[in-house]
Each structure stands twice: as structure tokens, then as C-alpha cells.
Length: 388
Ligand SMILES: NC(=O)c1ccc[n+]([C@@H]2O[C@H](COP(=O)([O-])OP(=O)(O)OC[C@H]3O[C@@H](n4cnc5c(N)ncnc54)[C@H](O)[C@@H]3O)[C@@H](O)[C@H]2O)c1
Image 1: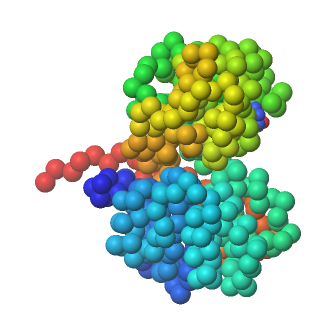
Image 2 (image 1 turned 120 degrees about the vertical axis):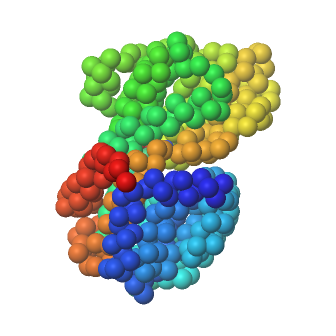
């Protein structure tokens, strides 16, 4: 597994460029960075880059996505990784507290948990930091006044939107479906909930994998956009009653619930690719009277056996399908190299005092987007092999 971490690190070419620069500039010398982000091989490349910038880096993963090999690798390479895989929120809160106990100067958060916890026990050393996700932005926006720190939201960069959210999550959700189920996408009726940047990519990727795709979106304008993009936009219950595969990517809670068990056809497969495992109400479904048993069927697949004989399947227990299943690969290395380069540059800008308190929960500064875009295109230019 170490070789995978090294393979991924070797493909993060933009981060490698930044790390070489950080060796000289040391923007984080003497600073502690507390990070709470999925611990998998691509984040390893980011955390090692921050370390090359002179930081003491403390890290913990998100719920149910921590890969033990990545934790071991980080600990062997100078990054303090706290805790292993857990689905227990209380255990994870303990890991976050351990990081906050070290009074970090900067925070790199993924979902807003660490900032929310810091508000309960504020420490004047914190200069600010970054937040990776849509879910985190939604959570932190109402807390702006209390946070009163520069916090740059990576998700709101146009580069993150198109490279990771639109292109990469769509590809990795299809890849995860194939890997976990070993079933074909061809001719399947797929229902995608949410037509934000992630939903757009998921819908398109399944359509390109020869599925019939319907979109359910509460925003009427986006719903119409889905229609103009060539997707069916039926009523939700009508779509669910004919679904082979249902995918949630809304950042909302209880999108698919126990009520839907009555209308889902036999063999339907439920998948969540949204950040939090709350889009499909798994506990509510498992407790429903119509369910005879609920339990694991195969790695990454659980099944609701209904009293009427139907079976409804659930991938990765409703956790993010591309990061929580067997041998999870996450999003493509290139998309993460881009997003994590934005992370490194934004943390550098906060460390250097280039962004002030008025930049609390705001998008990545345009100049950083432009730097990353230019550097990526430059690195992607074909370099013909030179003859000896
Ligand atoms: N799996 C991954 O690797 C990955 C990567 C990036 C983002 N995400 C996550 O994917 C989720 C979606 O991200 P996004 O950037 O597209 O968000 P977004 O806010 O742009 O889009 C979500 C859409 O869902 C719609 N919606 C909300 N509730 C709904 C409901 N009940 N039914 C139908 N539609 C509903 C909203 O109107 C919105 O258009 C977030 O949780 C985000 O954190 C996952």
C-alpha cells in the first residue's frame, strides 16, 4: 500500500512544484497547522507539502474514510496523524480536540467540524485557514460573525467546481459503482438527486456510461437546466418507483427516507456521494416496520430485506461511495492535485497575512486560481523524450 501512496505522490505534479518552492520560502516556519480531512493517499501528498513549508502538521480524518496505511505513512514521515478509521462522532470529536489542544495557528477543515469545535473553545493563536467543502461553507456561513477570521473556501473556486466536483466525482462515482457491485451501468435507470456541480457530473458520467438518467432537483431553474442538458426530470416518486440506481448529491439531510421503501422496486441500489452520511436516512429505514432484516451482503453492500420479499441494496452504508467502500480510490489524482494546490496556496496567503478578517468564509482569491490554472496548463504541455 505504501507503493500506492508513492504512486499518487508522484502524480501530484503541481503539489511537487509547490513543495520545491516551499523548501526555499518556508511560509509556515514555526507554525502549527491542524487538519481534519479524509486521510487517503492524495491528502498525504498535501500534508507532506505543508510540512515542506516548515509547518508542524497535525491531522485527523473524517468519519469512516480514514485509510490506516495513510495514517501509518504520515506518522513515519513527520506528520502527526491522530486516530484511525471511525464511524463514531464522539471518537472523532476526541481526535479534533487533541488537535485543538495543540493551539494551531492555521486550520484546514473539511466539513466545518474543526472550526465549529474551535468556537466552543476559542484560542487567540488561530490566524484562520481554509474549508474544503460545500457542506462546510453552508455550516460556517451563519457563524461568520463569531469566527471573525480569514477562512477561504476551496470549494467555491471555479477550478474546484469544474475539475473535482463536476468531472472527478462523476467519474469516481461510476468507478465505485462498478468496483463495488461488479454490475453494468448499461441500460440502468439512474435517478440523481441534486443538480449542483457534483450532480451535473454524476448525471453526465452515468449517461456516458450508457444509463438512462433522471434528475430530481428542488431548484426549478436547475431542474430546467437538467432538462436542457438532456436528462429526464420526472416527479420524484415516479422516478423512484422505476429506479435501478438512486444517487444523492445534495448536501441536504433525509433526501431518501423510510417512506420511499414502499415505492422502490426490488433490487434498487441506493448510493450517496454527498459529503455527509445523512442524505439517505439509513437508521430510519433500518427501523421501519416494513423491513424484516438489514445487514451486510458483500464488501460495501448492505441489504434491506423487506417483509414483502423485495431487497433494496445500499452501498457503503450511505457514506460517500467514492471514499468509503472496499479499496476506495476517491477522486482522480489530477483533480485533487488541483484542489490541494489551491489549499496550499490559500494557507500560505493566510499565514502571510495576505487576507484579512473581512475574508471570512469567502471563495479563493482570483490571483490564486489564476496561478494554479497557469501552472497546471504549463505542466501539462507535452515534453518530447530527448535522445541520449
Ligand atoms: N464525493 C465526493 O468526492 C465529493 C466531492 C465534492 C463535493 N461533494 C459533496 O457533494 C454534495 C453536493 O455538492 P455540490 O457542490 O453539487 O452542492 P450544490 O449546493 O451546488 O448542489 C446541491 C444541489 O442539491 C439540490 N437539493 C437540495 N436538497 C434537495 C432535495 N431534497 N432533492 C433534490 N435536490 C436537492 C440543491 O438545490 C442544489 O442544487 C456536497 O455534500 C459536497 O460536499 C462530494
